[in-house]
Length: 359
Image (cartoon, rainbow, N blue to C red; front, side, top):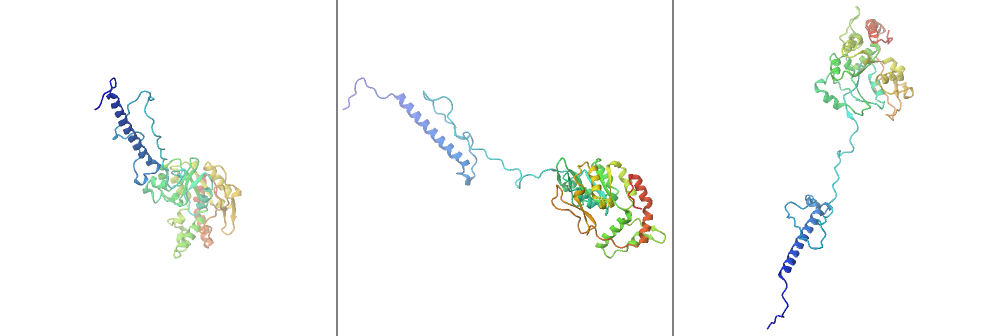
């Protein structure tokens, strides 16, 4: 038989309810904390095989946010958060390495002619200058590939810095009727370089090159004259027609002022390469870095070659096709062609204000 002690009462009901509520809240908080730690461990590599999404810094939207009921004496403010995982490093922009310096630009200068005058030598010499970047091949854009558009043309160019000049060479431009207008439409400020040579010597060199590829072509004399007895020269033959420099120059002067065209002597390029290239550097607005000390004469080829420069560690000489021996031509044929070219040469001298002494 139980007896109740007078003056003693059972545990108060409100205190028990508070204890139950506190225990329930603590349980939910522990569950949430464990969930957060497990989720954020993905960034540390524990869940990489599953490729799970990164745990957000705050609680997920689909998980109810449980805030425990504050107790007397608890510090004010929200509970401290677990430290956020470090942000991922950005992927490199160029997976193949650092981006190439410079920009592909349309050329500011062109070597437009003439064939077999020494254009390859001028190109190889000037591209040794550190402030010049040149296309090594002949793109033939303004005579054969103009329909491809300027974007295609620009894509062929080497990358250049702001301080560098983009240059290309195609000797057939000089005798292409549409080339001056097309180049002018690209840029009226384009600088033009023309390498000229005694037209008779140039024609023989042209014929020698063609003969090496087509041994069955007619003789030089047969191609040069319609009637040698009457002294009628066949100007329809391209090797002869190219040498009419004054005639071709008229088309260029319709679009470009004389000061924008520089003429290089093919003969002086052999005897004084530093002097000729010094004038080319002046014309392009470059420092005179190519001087006498950079050239030497190759006795085998009969042509100057370039020594080491700041931009090139190896000597640079022209290829095997350059400097080949010319075919032997009847001296009387040469004299007749000289007489034919004489008035054209004199007109050319007067137009450019320079005597090349080809007579």
